[in-house]
Image 1 (tube, helix red, strand yellow):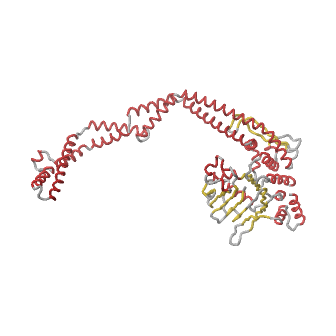
Image 2: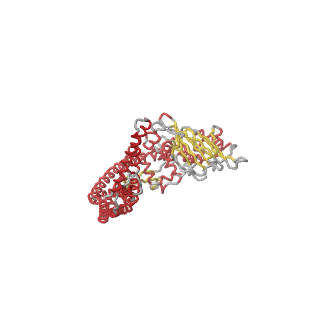
Image 3: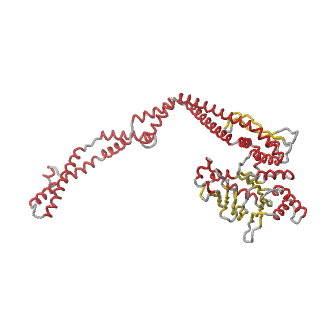
Amino acid sequence: MLLELRIENLLLIDRAELRPGPGLNAITGETGAGKTVLAHALDLLLGGKPRPGIVRPGAPEAYVEGVFDLPRGLLDSDGLTDLRERLAEGDGEVVLARRVTAEGRTRAYVQGRSATAADLRELGGRLLSFFGQHDHRRLTVASVQLDLLDGFCGPEHLALRDRVGRAHAEVRRLEAEMEELRARAGTRDRDLDLLRFEIEEIDAIGPSCEEERSLLAERERLRKVDGLRAAAAAGAHAIAPSDADFQGTAGPGVAALLADAERLADGVAGADPQLDSLAGRLRGLRLETEDLGGELWRYLAGLESDPARLHAVEERLDAYERVKRKHGGSVAAVLEHAEHCAAERERLENAEVTLERAEAELSQAGAERARLAALLTSGRRKAAPELAKRVVAELASLAMDGAAFSVELCPRGETGPAGAERVDFMLAPNPGVPAAPVRESASGGELSRVMLALLSAAGAGGTSTLVFDEVDSGVGGQTARAVGARLRALGEGRQVICITHLPQIAALAEQHFKIVKSSGAATDRVARASVERLEDAGVVEELCRMLGADTSDAGARRHAEELLAAA
């Protein structure tokens, strides 16, 4: 049940609070006063899309907040898994809210935390069922009629319908797979040739990331062999020059100079501990230098220019580049492409087996869908007469005594996600008139009453709050009184909020709210609308207005009081 509704800066409403109670709640007001703003506020709480210009002129944003009683067990639904942790069962109440900026951006909230419009649709749709001014026209849509019949059949039937939907989706998936397999069968040989060529091309190279790194390093060394020789020779000659260098002008190397210095230090060993320590370090440096000089000479001896090897390495790397350009730009991508080609080749080579297996799976899935759809049809055929019987009884209480109503099941050309048939609601508004589909036989007022009859008979909306936005349009007189009585009866087990322009309905409400529009102040030219709760004399005055009379009209007041007394 809706406990509180708060609205700020929504069209004409600057700020308003509404606290509807259990049973039937009527909302009335002059045409254009802003009654439908309340309906739009509730639609926003249900995740609806905001209309352009919904924010009050001059305001930065509009805000709508609804406080609902949280029924026990509501959060057990699969669709509310993501919200279950933040909505503890013990809370008792849940707050839904929506902000809409003047630019049209929206933010949704559940229990004060940021949420999505989808969250509001999932949760709000379980708390409140909304029927707009033209929702009775939805009865002319075959899918809506089917939904009403299935809802009347009960939760187990609805679960069966979900299974039919999943079975149908599986059949469609397998049909698409079959279509793809058949389409590819025509190009199978060509595709296999291409796959074999690409696999052989990659296998001929046998690429690996390790080899590529090794080849790149070897190419770099072979390209710069002259520079490497020069660098190694300079170091080797500096440490230990060859005999030819020594006999020339180069002079002794570093190793020979260090050896001479070591001999001089050994000659005075023991004379000064400090020099002895330094002499030890000198010896170590001499040994390391001699070792480094030997390694440089050996490295230099092993360096040879090899143009043939460089050419071979360049060709191998060119092959790497060609295959990388064709298949992803890296060796890893080439290897991955090779694996994909191998798997695809295997799949195509086994295409006939795959096709046979897919055909068997499709046949099995089709049989399962047909079995489930038959169960669905059986449940509908069993429930249809009972639903029609209850609707006829409800129509009699809505001033359509003598009307005939039936539910006809018409086979579809093929089984769909909702089963193997469509539904037609057949109505004969008056005795002796042949029944015809409601889309052809019912006027606007009659459609409104048929909708109320179906809601009552089928139990649509469960225990959630029902909101009707002027669904009583097109009716009047005693018929309006009958519609009001049905709305009040719907409110016996739940909360019903009805935006209405009929005094016969407003008089039956247990709580009455009025939308009042006033001109803006001198500093604010925008009109304002407010919500007032009416009691006793206020209700009488509003009923007089709805009857088209002034409050001073004694006859109108008497009529209004009679309407209230009859309630």
